[in-house]
Amino acid sequence: MERELRAQIEKSKALGLEPTHLDSHMGCLFSTNPAKFSAYLKLSKEYRIPAMINHDMVNGIIKQMPDLFKDYFDENTPVVDRVLTAGPEDYKKV
Image 1 (tube, rainbow, N blue to C red):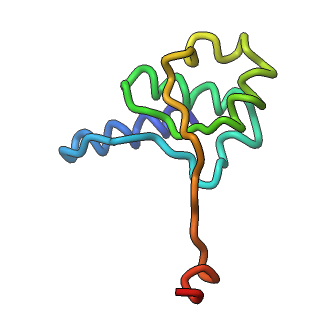
Image 2: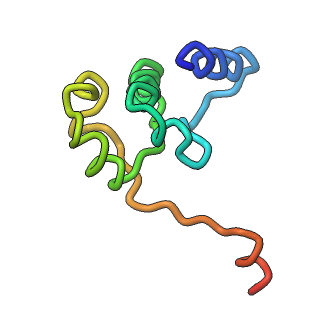
C-alpha cells in the first residue's frame, strides 16, 4: 500500500503537479489497519505534503497508539478542524 501511495505522489510530480495535500477517500486508510494510517502519515512527512487528518483521528487512533505514530505525528502536524461534505440530497435543497 505504501508503494502505491508513493507511486501516485511520484506520478503527479512527474506530470508537473505539486500535490497540495494527501487524502484518503472516505477514510479508507484509517478504518482497517493502523499500519496503513501510519504509512499515510509517514509519506506526508517525507514529502512535506499535509495529510488530511482531523481531530477525531487524533483523539482516536493516534492517542490510542502513540508509539505507532510518534515518528510521523507531533504538535506541528496540521490537523483539519472539520470536514464539510455535500451529497446529492444537499444539492436538491438549493
